[in-house]
Length: 349
Image (tube, rainbow, N blue to C red; front, side):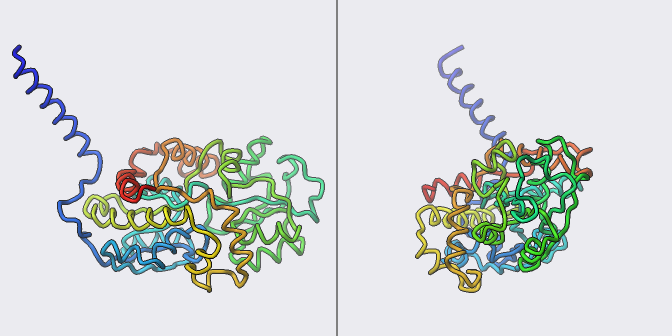
């Protein structure tokens, strides 16, 4: 074989590998403008710390800077946000990653394309009044545990803890509370013995000495202790078909979120107070900032989904979600890191 032919064959090999790689991920069009510059994003609880990166991107004009006119529709829960996209009322959803897994089990093919939070930001606390002598998860047997409705993470934290004591979810009593005030009242009045909830409820109860935290996914260390690894949560996701048809739009959305994640890496208390709307501050700036500092490290630094984190989420979901147990989930189709990688390179996140 001549040297020229060898070089030609190697170049053809490289071209073939490149072509195969291009088939696996959405291909950005030559133009930089989004295919859809006007779109609706449904979110479950925009004012929560869970979706703080989305709020920052919106408040600082990062979506507009990417050429997007984004309408953010707050439908209160992640489940409703997903339903809004499925029904065509919204194009993209800001919700929890485990929802994407559940949707695939229903033959609805969605894909997460940028991660906002790398832990569920849920804590489980036992009442210092009704369970002052709590020592191990086995002490939860027969107890009443308050959780947030339509929030799989509230269940998953409890069930992961129960699994350590070889207990099942049927051996405790779950009660759902849809509002912060109701959840607080139930714990303080003794209606429940423990609570699995997000902030500000948990920080508020902890500060007042009403609970002892026994499982905490507001930190990376705590999430690893509960789930055995990083556990992705708040993400932006959309139907796979939408992502394939609108890669520039998804890149623009990702750029805005990663830009916000970069900003949050160095933001101080003053920056947060100036940027977050007053209505989101819970009427108590000090409490909001305490919550932010508590879960700060849970915020994704760059929007990327670690492969092991996706697997951890699936294993956690399988512990209690019976419909998903008989379905083989293809993790590779539940998320894409291509958009976040590009954004990370651009913003040095």
